[in-house]
Length: 125
Image (cartoon, rainbow, N blue to C red):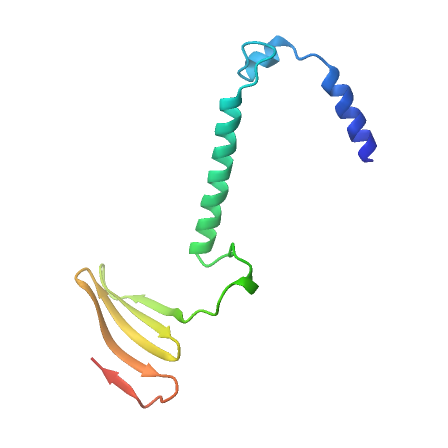
């Protein structure tokens, strides 16, 4: 099967390109290769691939790094609730302690924390 494709490629590579097709691709002469156009096209494709990977990773989708190379995460965002147009409550776990944070345009404050080892050890700020 591969031999047929290779033979077809050899035959197709010997056929001279019509000048109209060359002008359509941006060539003004039959020997010139539009290097700048090829490099810009490659850069555009690589940029789109990196942007797609970044979007997937930032939204919790597919990770670029294999799972066996990552360390276990110490910080986890468990839940976020919007309480107003500019304020939100966030439940965050660091190691085995959960924190309730209030975020506003002026900053963030610790509202409460609770240790997973001792559930009665909750403090209110």
